[in-house]
Length: 193
Image (tube, rainbow, N blue to C red; front, side):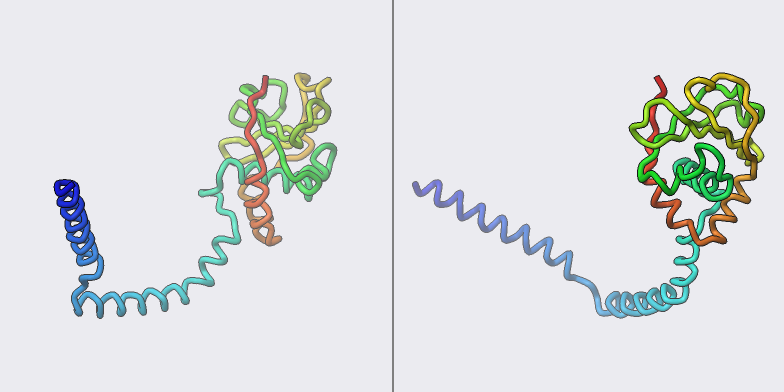
């Protein structure tokens, strides 16, 4: 019994020393460091105030060089819905909360082949029917196609073409970048069986 008592006392003392060590490290800042930290915080908060308008503008816009693949798909769906406004593109962005995207390994049946593959956008959980197909070229040219399961592999001309840089600029000018970023969170990459 005495042995257990001494082990417990030794454990408590050890815990107190360890706690004191870490507390000392955490709360030991010299007066010089404390003054410097306050000065840095003041400078940092004033620079944050000056750059807050700049950061809000950049967060509310899309950039061609930093746009993500899902944001690209959302931007193309938005543009197809609002500017192409033909066939399956009409209402694709605005009428469906979730979209699925599939990558095709070839674009042989498409007139504007892009980089050699095509992308299919469709509302989630919609098997078959109309498909919004697009390609993106190395120069940023986007070609929009309407297709359905019956003519998917037949030769097609695009219903519209435009440059991705122009699409992004148009979206930024309309103040719709926030919508694009939100929709990008609701586009799900699927494997085509």
